[in-house]
Image 1 (spheres, rainbow over the protein chains, first blue to last red):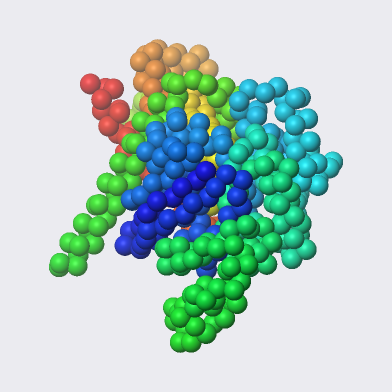
Image 2 (cartoon, chains in turn green, cyan):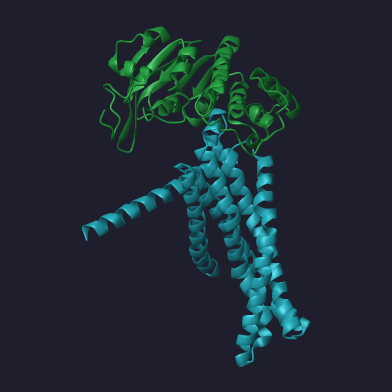
Length: 251
Length: 257
């Protein structure tokens, strides 16, 4: 279970998070939606302890990870797998070494780790690419390799940073199906951030709308679709007209 | 006037902040260096990258430096009949100054720039964050191997540079100016003390450690995409050069005490 309480974060004078409260139950698929610059990525980086908040706490299975020292934080991180927006594959290593990176680091023999990598790659629908370098892969393949890497050490929580951004719509849907499959097969808790509403409706069983550094509304996909909140409504319908003002544009 | 003082003040604050954060990174690197597990495989890889692949550039730089030193000394010293000292000038200059400093500059330009660019790219493409999420300390995994190998490799390269520089001087003095080979060696060795060589090697180890910390720091804290990587790389080379040249003076003064 992930519990975020009153999370604040500023960069210089720029306040990004202004008191985020969010609860993600075990096995739940939470999707945080929000516009560009709404603080979604910053929120996600707090969940896995890549950033330290100015105020507030992030409880992962009851442990406040914002107060942990480096050593214990790395232990908690083993519960997590994260798929980055640009996949963030290590471009100095072959695909299989990327996938089994955490396993190799924890001392697994190379031959065994390679087998695990091949198996995880098959799980995301990729075969015969284990010896390629990341630069030889297409965007969609990179994301799937990134996903294979995120699940290789059998995490309990998967984080997805804009899983469908930067790839074509069909590949986007392949990723959506994979996210659902991961949850059903591996029984993981997942948190995704996105501004792709099609993806959000498909993969979420809870959706939270982040606006100006706070969660404005949380609900089921159906509930969000039929929202009466004017902010959420404008965002999910993708309208330039409404209470959300874009800087420099007079709507 | 106020604006000038303001600008100066903000520069000093920024400079102090960067220096502070470099020192913190240095401290963390030392800590991670001492704590197991040890990154032996990665360190070997960096020794190849920073050391072995720098040999050709270092060799060419050293040979030509030795040659030009002999050329200048021979023609210059001839004016007062001291051209027999060519060997001494070349061997002292190479071991005490030119060997360590030029090797440092070459490695900073070649391997240091690569360190900053590689780490910078890893930062902006979130690969460093990815390391963190895979429970791997990026300082241990990326910076410690570069730091260790740079500090080991620089003295080794300096030994090569010292020898090749003296050989380059030999080529000019003996083959071009017809000096006797025995005289060159005699003058080159007789006034050379072990302390000259070890002092130079100590300096180069310091330069190696400095280059690694400066360049890794610039790369590790890169911000702002491709442009940021460019800036980090330029910054890394410029600061490394300054660090080498300025610290060289003070280290030399201290060693000569």
